[in-house]
Amino acid sequence: MIPGGEVLHRRRERSFAWGYGHILLFAAIAGVGAGLHVAASYIEHEAHIGAVATVLTVAVPVALYVLMVYVLHDVLIRRFDAVHWLLLAGTAVLVIAPALLAAAGVSMAVCLVVLTFAPVVSVVGYETVGLRHQEEAIAGIIG
Image 1 (cartoon, helix red, strand yellow):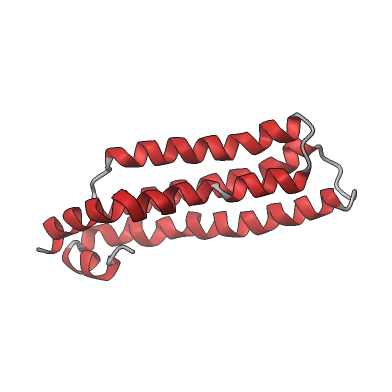
Image 2 (image 1 turned 90 degrees about the vertical axis):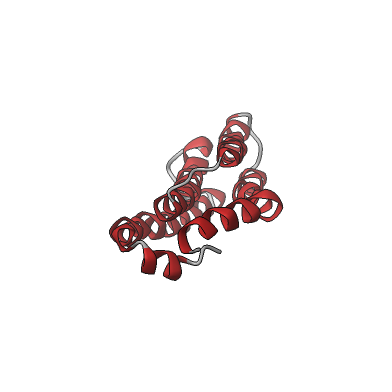
């Protein structure tokens, strides 16, 4: 976790983007819920859209959520780590793969399970490498 309070206390000019940036983050979370509702309607044969479109109603908000986590980190820390590009690429693969699976006729449940691994890429990356890099960046800000 980023010690946002300490960083914002020392770098108050970052608070505007940090605060308003969370609107998109929260919208993405709400979008995932709406997408899951569409997926449930699809599974119950009540939706009037195809499998790929249904997967995208969940995948796009998941992608926006992960992207916003990185954007907010960058707004606060003002340092984009090269490892983030690798993590975002891995996330992109796991966001795109379910749509391709749906197009190939794989069940909606399997597509959604694959999609759940998209944020896991960032979690594993943070726990293995990112935490150390973040601590170094924050030490430069708060001393």
